[in-house]
Every structure is written in structure tokens, then in C-alpha cells.
Image (tube, rainbow, N blue to C red; front, side):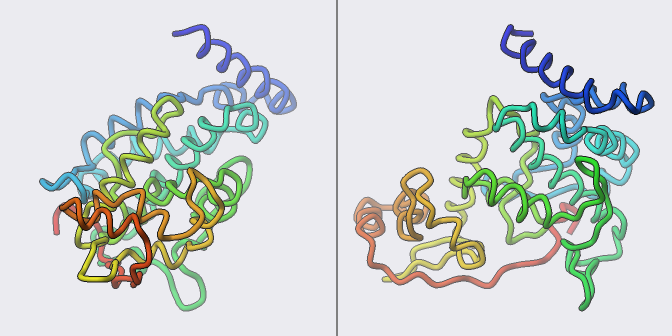
Amino acid sequence: MTHRMQRRNAIVFVAACGAVAAHPAVWAQAVALDTSYAAWEALLKKHARWLPDNKQGRVDYKGFMADRAALQAVLAQWSAVTPAAFAALSRADQMAFLINAYNGFTVELILTRYPNLKSIKDIGSLIQSAWKRKFFTLLGEERHLDWIEHEQLRPRYNDWRVHAAVNCASIGCPALRPEAFTAAKLDAQMEDGMRRFMADRTRNRLAGNKLEVSQIFRWFREDFEKGHLGVNKLPDVMARYAEQLADNAADHQRIRAGGLDITHLEYDWSLNDLGR
């Protein structure tokens, strides 16, 4: 363990001490967060797969079901993290924690109905979507998936690449990576996720004189207009990933020049199940 890691873990330890002093029963759990996410990564390596194109991914939910006890043990560890311990983490560690939590609890949500569903939307209803269903505890309160994405990750951390990190259990969504997100690799992981997603012509492509891209860029347009990484508007995103959207230099230049119409493809909400 490096000096930097020791110092960071010590900060988490001290913060957790103050937060749980009045509740000794949760002491051991409160300081047990493994920021390498080794147990979660072991599950992902077994049950998350890149397809042969290395752009889309599928999830072996049947395999996750067999390992559900191990998954639930990981989720219980995350649920035990106190707000004070979380606040003591670095920005990158906080993001990695929230992204992993979103992805892990999404898998668990699918398993509550698997194999009797075709889409995550089947879990929701006209009254309450799957993403508004409170079914887990995080940072001391009962939460839903939208709380992680729309109340924490998007507004607090202002990095639009998070949309290629969180996975909504659907084919239209960027892939669930077969590895855990960690602070040390976070930037590279999010960038790699965006590049793979943008290179998948079923979801993003140049078609004649227009760009046909994912609904993600319509639903969350405001996230791409805040200046992060020099991106102030959707054409800036397309210019950044011109080489993924098209195959030849002339088309790359056309995309980077801007001015192309942008339309949005139909989103595929089918379950990203390896077995289907």
C-alpha cells in the first residue's frame, strides 16, 4: 500500500470514527470500504462481457443469480458506508463509489425479477418507474437509482462522461464494464467507455449529411453544455469523437467542422442479457 493510499484510508477511518461513535454496532462495517472494489470486480469479470466488436456489452444475469449472495454481501458493505466516511473521500473516490453503487444495485434490481422480464422497464409501473423505486440504503437513507444519477453524479461532479459509466441494464445503454471503477483509473475508464459507445454504429453514426446519435444526447443535453473538457454544445462532443463516428479523414473533418444536423435514434430498452 502506498503512502498516499495509507493517508486516504486513515482519513476515511477518522471520519468514520466520529460518525459511528454513538453506534458501536456498525463500527466494523463503517470502516470496511475497499476502494479497490476487489469483490465487485471479481463478479464483473465473471459475469460482464464485451461482445466481439468490443463496443457493446452483455451481462450474464443467470451467473449473477448463482452468485447473488456474493453480490448482496458487496451491496451490504456499500450500504454501511456513512455520510461522514463518504465525505472524507476524494472526488474521484466518491464518483467511483457512486458509479459502482449504481451499477451494482441495478444488477440486484434485475435479479429481483429475473428471468421473468424483457426490460428493466417491466419492473416499473405507470405510477413509479424502476428508477424511482426505493429498494436499497446508501449513505444512511433509503434510496432509488435516480438519486444516485440525477441528484448526485450529474449535478455534483459535472462530468458528462458519467453517461458512459452508469449502466441501465439495457442494450441501448453504454456497456457494463467487466471491471470496477476506481479512483486511480476513473478518468481513463470513463473516456474509454465514451469511445467504445461512440464507435458503435448501432447507437451513434454519421449518415450522409447528418449525425444519428443516442437518445442520451437528447435526454441529458444540458450536461453537454457546461464547458467540461471544452464541450459547450452537442457538436463539440461529436467533434471530440469524430474518429469513432466515421471511418475516413474527410468525414472526420466534416464532423469537426460542425454544422451537421443531429438526430436521435430509437433507444433499445431490451435487457442486456448475455443469454438472449
